[in-house]
Image 1: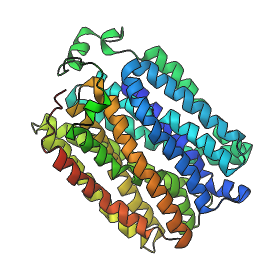
Image 2: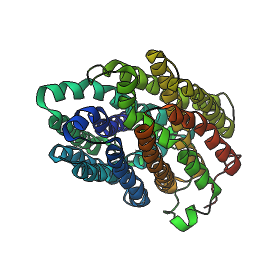
Image 3: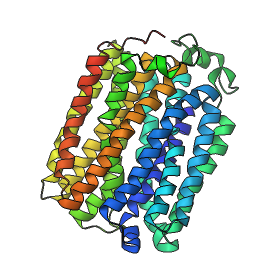
Length: 406
């Protein structure tokens, strides 16, 4: 039930996030956006998302998952609906900035919920399952947004998807409590959930967290890889339009294939490390073997920028997207492997901040590359090497995934 709540939150999160990318050709034609203008809209979201993580992770650690997550979803849902009132690059950028503030709470709260509700041996799988909700959201959005747009207009697409978050809040507040406070658990279930739980520690200040190599291991792991997912999310409809010459309706099947691959990869990556732990492997070896496999699976995406067969490109991107999500399930879980629950949301927030900063840089770079060359090849070269570089930093900074001595 808890994993289901997190799954649907992730789905709604990415529906609201992806609508702008799907509607880019439509809005670009109506408002005359340049590629650089669109990159500025993406940059506004990314900047707000990253800057807010300095505060949101700490806030969730302080007020708790239930209150913090609910407030975040409320804020981003209203912001998503506000896009319907925009009519210029500046107004869309303001709406995206507000959306980024709200959505910054999603993953810190979700990873904290996993740390509260799952023993260590199941956390990567639980993270992989709920994180696959991002891909389901990305699959559903291309199916419903064109229909809503052609029937009711693009403004209705923002209103309809944004309203889903309000329904989620009702369900979450009705069902979510800490395990020890939940009336829905049996005593046996509670014992199992708390089987390897560490002693509760107080909230940890930033000046302490930033001294640990473990904090930087997770942070740099996301710094090098998070921007690649942003490319898939915000630029993939444009890639399909350029390379496959598809309109808004025609993008549905290719995007379905890409994000179905991402969903499979998310669950498989989390399952693999959890399975290795159950087979007797160390947590360190299990997580890093899974991450290495994912990093290697991304590398063929370089060919997507050179192949003359458009569907070969789609399948290569689907493989890379699945590998990214498998990687993501494990890099998030490193946080709960190395830190107490009281610090998990803060560390995830900091790590996501670093990923967001690099995402801002890459968004601008992508805009200039496409404006000057129209080619995705340089972008895919970066994507193909980023995960191996990130894994080197993780290994150097956290060779044994030792617990942070707080």
